[in-house]
Length: 383
Image 1: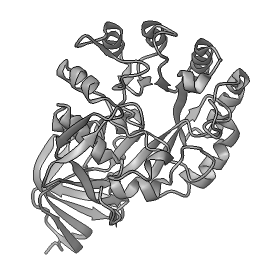
Image 2: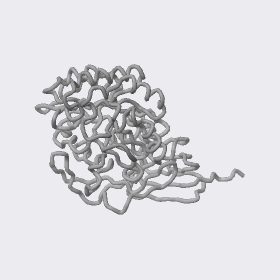
Image 3: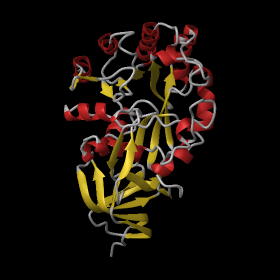
Image 4: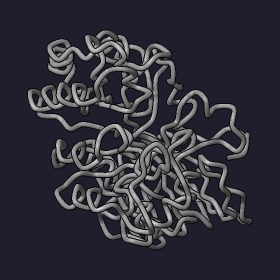
């Protein structure tokens, strides 16, 4: 007789969602040796431990495409294992926390020491976000040769290049020179750009976007000021044209980059973000309730985005963009056992955008995260 398979952990859920496998319904996931061993409506075999999650949705571990994970050396940085992993995020992309000068230290102190999977959008500025002034205020810090050398030395850790041409980042420096240098690095290293736009009164959005290439990512897509992708109830034609030729758009909520009215207008016109991200940083840590990716997802749902599109925008799509799919971002046997268990609130809550506008809606929160097969629970402080 064939012996029944022995698993480390069996998870039973009211709903399993995976856009990559078109799975959406009740089921079970078996884990063994840090990997997904089986995904079925009913898994055959025994497990050392079984966890049941009624009234939840189990999804691939969430991926946050724009945040500030850094254990040191970043003015915005937060410890990813403490502030992201317990809230469902198993993979995160650093948006420019460090540049070439501190790249090795970032690998040593954040990437290799974090249970969370961390990838880096290296800042074009050699000093990165390590000082309180704009990272491009000194044009010489946008050092093309030094940036290329750092990327070539750390290919496995570096996803792409962070190029933020906002007035806050550039100060008196011409943003056109910053983007030109960024494009030189990106072309030489064959990597994408994570791009923060300049306000239109300084530089036409159409000109900025026409410089980008398919696969580049524009973040802060639903902010109202100092630039906005909608006008008079319509998505700007230059924004739609950029998407049509393969430019991706990321949310990047942050402290000033999400507006409910902008989101509702864009979503109603079919312009949803390709990826949903928090731009989580140090200033968020004292907020109550917590600024988390599940709560950010809830704001998109309150603005009219379809639930399945939201779940895809924090799993399969960012995993593909970050080039870690199908290692993660899906519920497939053989992939890393990264999961997020999300619960929908029993009662509506107040949700606030960056301008202080409010919506009253239900919210998601992570009641558990599984990373490499290990179960992590959130802190007792409510989301």
